[in-house]
Length: 269
Image (cartoon, rainbow, N blue to C red; front, side):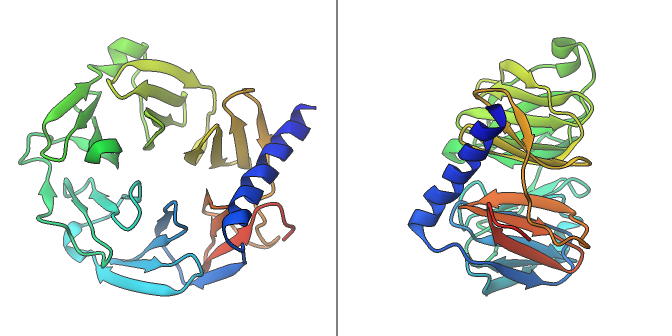
């Protein structure tokens, strides 16, 4: 019964998106280092020091060099056509426009007083979240980098030293992925809410009541109402190595060695 409810939720998720627009398969050829998607179905893909933008039909829209940023660890498309890029090595981040050019100046976090930020993401009201490795704290700031919330030292709060690799804000919650501990959840005031017992996730995303994640066990779905975890068909070709995955608008986006493959949810490879 539980498996059926998870399958039904996935089908409903796909059918809702299908009602808005036809869901077609396409691929974006090339070896990409990382990628993300936005709620409009656009794809942002990093190839070396060039960031490329593709629309929901897979057509190349624009590209721009991010050479001056250093190694880009994160592309966050919380706001469609307004992505943020973050380089922990250089301690720099920037919000880009729909031409992938910086809006205003590139932000140097060290000069702003945040010298050990290793993770960053965007949030509502043009706010940002930082994970400060030196302070072992999550900090929420406004677009002027003025502090709005601070968790304090997480090792003292949680009883262990977190080692997160990714975070995302969704529906007034911050989700922090520590593969050894699970996905830690906080509210917008920095108050710890709970830990979702999902370990070993290399990437994840929250979509409504569903949390999609990808790890050594493949693509899986966590239902935040029933607390059930089930695998789902990611539609990868049998011979392909999946490096990352995202779900958006009834499509599964698979980062393979030689392409980003986009297929409708619920179809066979």
